[in-house]
Image 1 (spheres, rainbow, N blue to C red):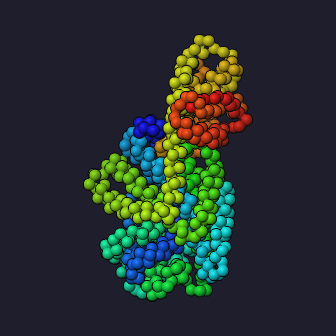
Image 2 (cartoon, helix red, strand yellow):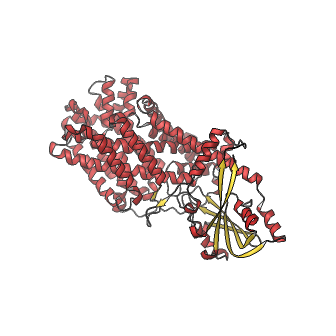
Image 3 (cartoon, one colour):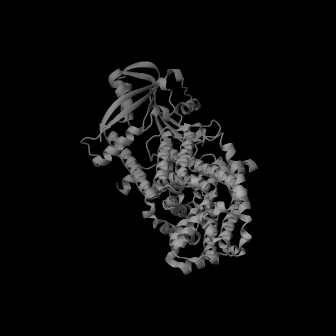
Amino acid sequence: MTPEELADALPDPDRAIEAHDHTNQKLTAGLVLACLGVVYGDIGTSPLYALRESLVHAREEGLPENAVIGIVSLLFWTVILIVFVKYVLLIMRADNKGEGGTLSLVAKAQGALGHRSWKVYLLGIVGVSLFFGDSMITPAISVLSAVEGLELVAPGFTPWVVPLTCGIVMVLFSVQRSGTEVVARWFGPIMLIWFVTMGIVGATHIFDDSRILYALNPLRALSFLFHNGFGSLPVLGSVFLAVTGAEALYADMGHFGKKPVRVAWTVLVLPALTLSYLGQGAMILQHPENIANPFFLMAPDWFRLPLIILATMATVIASQAVISGAFSVAQQAVQLGLTPRLEIQHTSDKQLGQVFLPRVNSILMVGVVALVLTFGSSANLAGAYGIAVTGDMVITSFLAIIVFRYAWKWSWLLVLAIVLPILSIELIFLYANLMKVVDGGYIPLAFAVIVITLMLIWVRGSAMLERKLKAEAIGLDFLVDKLAKSPPTIVPGTAVFLTADPDIAPSALMHNLKHNRVLHERNFIVKVEFATTPWVPVKDRLQIREIGKGFWRVVCRFGYMEQPNVPRALAEARRFGLKFDIMNTSYFLNRRTLKVGKANLMPKWAARLYAGLYRSASEATNFYRLPSNRVIELGQQINI
């Protein structure tokens, strides 16, 4: 696929329209508490394994025992630079009408450039693909690491770690259908207890060896890297585990607004993480034998089992956060035309952002269970963790450069002075994580390649199919003029024809004229568009233009975070002096069957794959919320 073909196939940023910024909410304790359970679940459970895996790699590389100070310093300053400076201070300012995430940043970058850029969209596709890989690995490693803590209180429990983890994972995915509205009320308080407990347990060990306080000096981190050279790269790959989940700060920003996320980070999350890493480091300096599982070994014997139970609850919440994020990102990908239509179920009548995608849920569940069964332990799975997140963060930095320079009009000197140091650190982490490819890092890369291939084939195939249909179609204006001169039998009522191109006569309309030989009294040719903004105000929802007697051309616009509801949108036509009576309105859809024949629109392997994706798309009736008893489908076979 050439760059020009990809650019032509992508959504047009010039069609982006203003939307309401729904994040200007008043800062309340409830909002701060709620964002703890959604935004910080992943990064809040990283102390379970980040320092442990870093020390394991340090020992494998033959580094001295006192290297723990340098490693803790690396952990602390990585959190400061990546999470605090990059995301909390900078990237969270680059919201797209209140929404965050890779695709939101893509839309904002496209709008800043003022034209469709295949390079920007390709970055977005890669970022989304890596995010889906992370959505499989995070639940697997998080729940495994918590359940493994039971081995400390019951050594004979080892054979049951994997089965119990699989059971928890399957229960977690099975309850997704009911939505997170009810259980989300528990997420915030549980995570509050988790962060407070983590901070207190860590604080009680800091003075086991007060030398650990030297880790707060960034020179200790630099000294570690300087003295150990390439030997520090495997350690860096594990250090990065401390910031996995940082992208949730940006992706989930739209649910709460910037202030609650920033306040939660400053008041609770950062202090708790700092105390935990310092406490683990001090304990290991005093008792090097505790390197096997320093987090749980910080707890006194009587509190170890309650801490393990609390950690398991926290990791389930962390998994819930990334699963919900996967649903949101998949919905955005559908709205932007990067994937076929997927069934999207709204699980709350109060929170529009709470959605459930059955197919995505099933794919994630199978992937997570397969990872748990294949790797068997969080230590083994750590090799697969990090690459996807690092790659996603690097892509975010490149997109941020475009936004800072062209949207915010910063000078190149200022942009490079701010972003280059962070990007350089992320590229070092990416290189360090790429060293883990043979140890399991190939898992997210392989999954990302599959997703990227599917998205590119879908984008290209859809564009080529649209061009083929347009070349063979009759112009709508021409047809309307012809029908005005020689009208068929007119029947009362309203007909709505959904189409991808409102300038050509829809196939369903042509088939209706050919086979039924009738025309409705009122005919609306409707195209559904998705803006590159998250939400579209109701007043901007419809554009209606009369093109002839009994015919109107309608453009119906939705934001990429919205679920399209065509009947409800058309009801707004009363503002244009038109009324829709649902009992007298029929919706005509064209059901296409693609056949891999002699058209040679693309290589046969790609054509077969595109045809399979096309068949997998959810029913247009459900996707556009059409009343099923008012829908008429007319078939058509197309060779590709």
